[in-house]
Image (cartoon, helix red, strand yellow):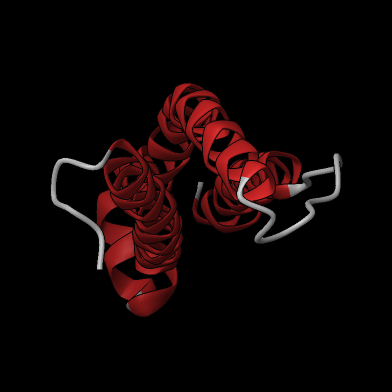
Length: 135
């Protein structure tokens, strides 16, 4: 059992917190973008009443994704430093030999970028196809 003031226990706690935090934010932004992006499709008659105002929901989802992309950069940088220290400690102790390659940052940023592209595409679809047919 680790002492609560053991630097390695604190490092492990920070590692777990940051890792879980990143996953939690990924799930939250995904749900948010999907829900906001689906608003124009839920009740097509609302789109006819609101006209171009219906774009606010998918635009908001797209803006949130862009903000998440920027914030995730900072969060992943912090996590990478913590992960490097944690992995160094594990290797020093002879517990685990880690690969020098770590794709977590790349995969997370690719996923959020893809979510951003889907959000932009949805805004374009709603604007061109739906609102174009109403005008």
